[in-house]
Image (tube, rainbow, N blue to C red; front, side, top):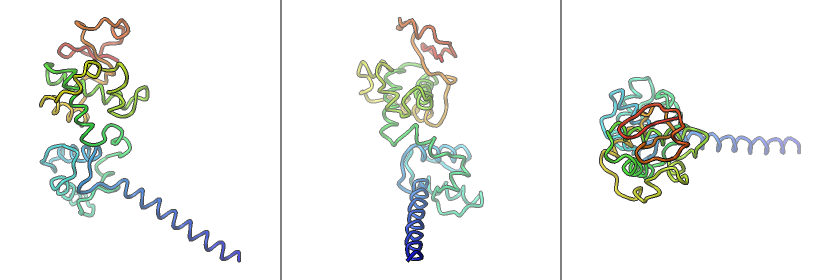
Length: 220
């Protein structure tokens, strides 16, 4: 009887471990049709290294598939065009970190509209810097850890308060959002910015200044 119980218990443990393992592998695998920040990370790294020739749009299509396949061939990995755990590790991508800042094209559009509303008319580098501030807040434990959470935090951005967040983004804002999502941060790690001509908030004026880009002062 004890042997039977032990056998049944062992069977259930094996099944449980198998389910956990398979779910983990599935969660860490990206292939044709996948979307999101991890795909953006895959595309941006492959583009930087000359494998990927398409747009960095977060959509795992034919060009991403073939680029991953070529990367795998050159790095001694099985060339199936699927970005699984070994391929992601070879790319230097931590999926948990990558997923924190982006969740599909809707969040890309949201960041584009925020940049457009906050920095329309600013130099391009200043537009990217505004996106960089959003991404810096996503990574900072004092702020929400998602793009929507940061952008819609009460009182955080004028473009949300005055409704400009709902307007179609400019082309330059879209490009700036892509650059910010891909890790470019001209703000130098800033968590705040302001326009001295418009801001009367004494607290923001007291923050240590990192740099000035266009009409915006970027600070810690």
